[in-house]
Amino acid sequence: MSVPANLIDGRAIAAQIQSELAARIADLRKRGVVSGLAFVRVGEDPASKVYVGRKEKACAELGIVSETHVLHEQTTENELLALVTRLNGAGHLHGILVQAPLPRQIRESVIYSSVSPAKDVDGFHPVNVGKLMLGDATGFRPCTPAGVVELLQRSGVKTEGAEVVVLGRGNIVGKPMAAMLCQKGRAANSTVTICHSATRDIKSHCLRADIIVAAMGVAEFLKADMVRPGVVVMDVGVNRVPDLTSKTGTKLVGDVDFQQIQPIAGKITPNPGGVGPMTIAMLLQNTVRAAEQSIG
Ligand code: GUN
Image (tube, rainbow, N blue to C red; front, top):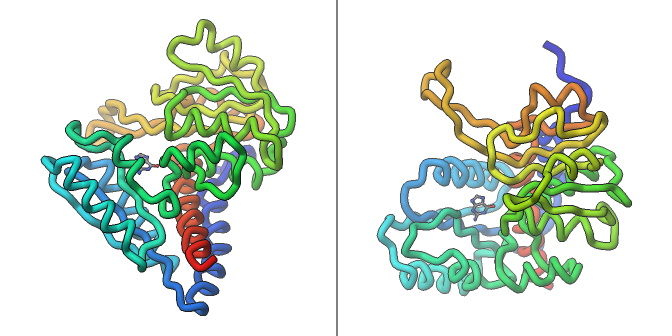
């Protein structure tokens, strides 16, 4: 079967970014700096294991040295804080990523605030969140929405003056996504509407949109009758749903009904193979920048 012409190939664009980063990593090595990233995983969440595994592999392929700290499910907040403090002070590490979700006894906000802002390659520390709101490019931007911006830019989608609807208001995607696209500047300058669970008529907003970013975590929520022809659709969703035809009895789907919307969209991300690979590419990019900034 041929590949539809309107697909945004996240794997190819991520590979392009990674090859650009390889040159910067080699340059750092020449200057005596080996880029280093620490992963912290608490408990045995199966999805987190897969995600951290993919990130470790991407680091290894690019020459970023990573180390993974695995803590048990009953770890206390203080124990995790002690580890983060140690990693903050480790000179060989330029980035720290504490994989979410964390067990219930640990407050994510406390942990994210404890990571040194200079090593916060997730972009979750309040200092980096604040810099994003202020349009201060010295901060780190959260990887998934930064990846969506990069996909739009590298696919030639014009954001200037565009009507953008962001579905979802989460701290990891929805809110930072809106903040990035409404900034004055390159690959931004959009008119942004955030829709969420209390929005009265989501369909009417979507029907006005030039670009829709779906990040609310509802399987195949966006349907053909909710969009206008030519719309650009970015699907951030990762939802596990029952599937009797698969061996595991489940499958992963996005927040977009791809079968319905692909034929009428101007451009659309496949899922998998769209936004997902970009999240990793942006994490690597943040880590390389953290390493570069460590030597001024
Ligand atoms: N869990 C799901 N997405 C993310 C992410 O971008 N960063 C971290 N640290 N955990 C996550």
